[in-house]
Amino acid sequence: QVQLVESGGGLVQAGGSLRLSCAASGRTFSNAVMGWFRQAPGKEREFVAALSLSGTYYADSVKGRFTISRDNAKNTVYLQMNSLKPEDTANYYCAASYHSNPYYTPRTRPEYDYWGQGTQVTVSS
Image 1 (cartoon, helix red, strand yellow):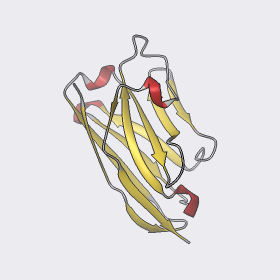
Image 2 (spheres, one colour):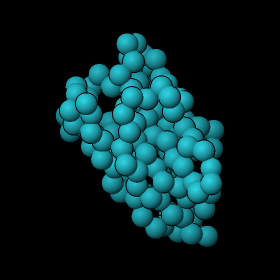
Image 3 (tube, helix red, strand yellow):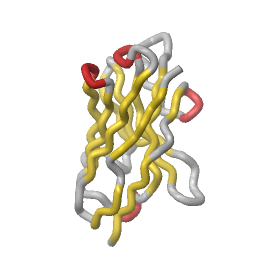
Image 4 (cartoon, one colour):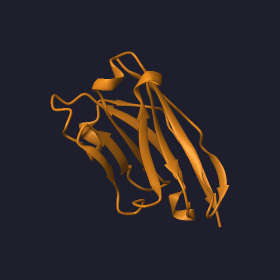
């Protein structure tokens, strides 16, 4: 079992920045592919970013503005969000995948095994 706890959400003005953190426990963190998703009210949960041994991947809507990174010594994955826009407003979730191939980077919700409870990000115009 894996526990994921997100933090760092909040209210920010358009153009501002936030850094989300996700602390993991329970299984070997370095073996996991980590991802971030988000869900706005009335919308489906969508892929934002992921990090595997093959590299980083981003949704087109956040490419160039968001950066995913991890610190295996701290069992933590981060999402640095810059140049935030009102349309980035959502509940942000981190997720862990223990796929047999650590070079494979899942980008759909069913491919992730564990989820955090989410942290709210609100961007005002």
